[in-house]
Length: 207
Image 1 (cartoon, rainbow, N blue to C red):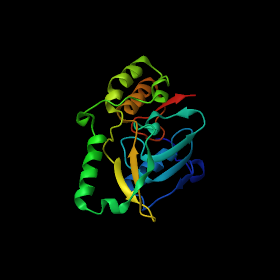
Image 2 (cartoon, rainbow, N blue to C red; image 1 turned 180 degrees about the vertical axis):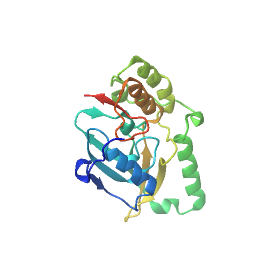
Image 3 (cartoon, one colour; image 1 turned 90 degrees about the horizontal axis):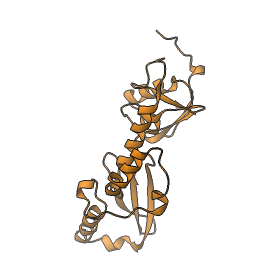
Image 4 (tube, rainbow, N blue to C red; image 1 turned 180 degrees about the horizontal axis):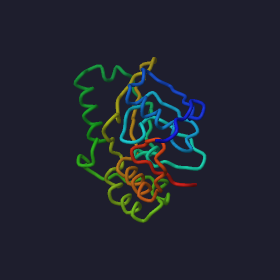
């Protein structure tokens, strides 16, 4: 059995929470605090349980990288886009329904609902990935997944501000390519000693 770490030896945690943490999430974060080279942890308002490292946490290390902490939704984030239209334009429920339906068709949740392939921006395609197998996924799978929304807590919605101006709010991420990048680096990472037992599959890459 490994030695028990004192509170002073564990990584400090800063949290921005909208609600108290559940017991399983709290336990996962406590295990993460004990992991080698974890220096600090930040917990975001959307934190929720995942297979290894909770989604919605930021982990600071000095020389190790945990692919599980990077996760499979690389680049996941939110974007608000102002529209040149006022909220009264959607006052009619039928008009609002048509707009939402068209949004769903233009930005499908899944690739199987994709009608056309959208060309990826040049700054996305010219950035080199770390392995030819990942480049192949980007050219094929990534081309179909690009501009799809995803599932889970991803969403696209229309909001109105205090001046009745409409905004488009989008929450999405890297889709299948991000998972492929994570899994590739997990396959190359080195297991570290199991003190204490976190994560369930604990691997690191030296840097």
